Length: 118
Image: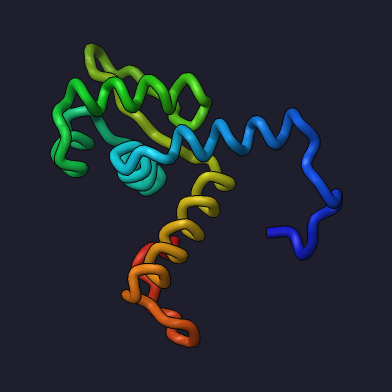
C-alpha cells in the first residue's frame, strides 16, 4: 500500500469506480466467492458447495464479477474454470476481513492472529 495519498481528494472517475467496486463486493456471497477464487481456480459446482449457495446463484454472481473484470475464465472441454488474480482486490478483501475480525471482537489490537492473511 502507498504511505500517503498523492491527491487530497479522488477525482469523479476514480470515486465512481471505488463505489462500484464496493457495491459489487457488498454481497456476502460474492465476497466469499472472490476470496475462494483468490486462492485457486474452481468450477461453479465446487464454489457452490464451498459458499453454501446453489450453482445457479453462484453462476449469476460470477457473471457480475466477470463483467467487472474481477474474475477470469478458462475453458477445458465443456467445463469452465474461474479464477481471480487481482492483487489489489486481494489486498482490499484481506483488509476488509481483518477489519471485520476487529469489529466482531475475534481479533484485538496488538494480536496478529488474523485468519484471512494471504
